Length: 152
Ligand code: HEC
Image (cartoon, rainbow, N blue to C red):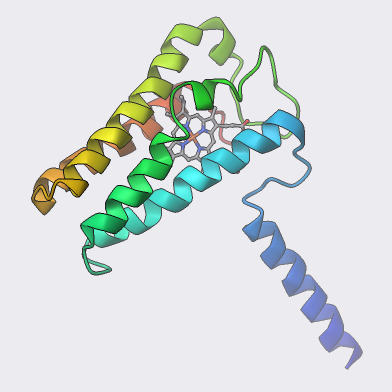
């Protein structure tokens, strides 16, 4: 009984750490941008699943998720990176502030490619075209992370 409770506590702690996406200990603007990135990630997942055939393809859901991602792009994203906000446990790279022009261009790309995806899905483009736009959008995540995120 005793050891059973101990195990339960351990599993609960493990699960909540997972749910927090490694946000443990983050606060202020670092926490805010981690939450924004998590929201972006949560909207990417179902789109990917639908396009890979793991779930029925529903263009309206794709458009809705893409729109939510677009809202986190551009200035909404750059506003979450005030000068030298490198408080632990951030994974942001200092290069963000020495190469702000590139960083903000990626933030704009994120928005424009999400808008392009939304438009295609909403206008009933074929699945192939939608998948292409999704690939472009995913490419912006990858490019920005490679340049400006230090994976810990
Ligand atoms: C303009 C640059 C940029 C773009 C574009 C971008 N990210 Fe990020 N992302 C970052 C940075 C920088 C961090 C680290 C933030 C921190 O830890 O303070 C991050 C962190 C994350 C995290 C981890 C959040 C956490 O809880 O620590 C996820 C998930 C993520 N991004 C998903 C995405 C996805 C999915 C996309 C594309 C749809 C994307 N990002 C596009 C810069 C970007």
